[in-house]
Image (cartoon, rainbow, N blue to C red):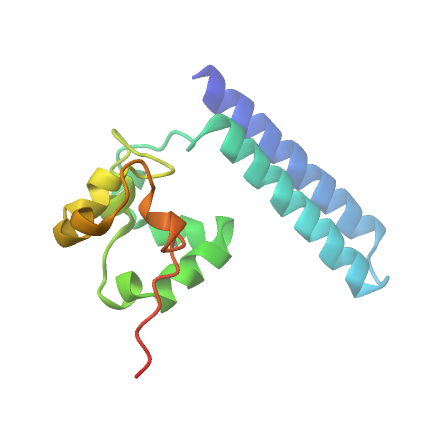
Length: 142
């Protein structure tokens, strides 16, 4: 509960700074506004990385990950969407786990569930994403 409260206060503080800056800069250069928005987004992401995934209700657990992440981490959602996994509709939880066993950086064992043959040509101790960047699994161009 303490982590959730701390996360909520941090997010509200970031949003407050963003709204104050927005009001102060109304009618000013849009590049300044863009920088303020990027700074606020970066601050929120930093809090989330420090605190882990915020707690969600049982009802919120039914919402697909991308519904929140399209705003929180749009670049990752787009990478996934354009990748083989996105096209094949491989869902986030299949690699990262559920809220009960979520891994921000999944273990190779989760990759081998679908890619068992890859285990034969992977160096021991070398993570899959050392050769296959996370969320960027491009389609083969022929």
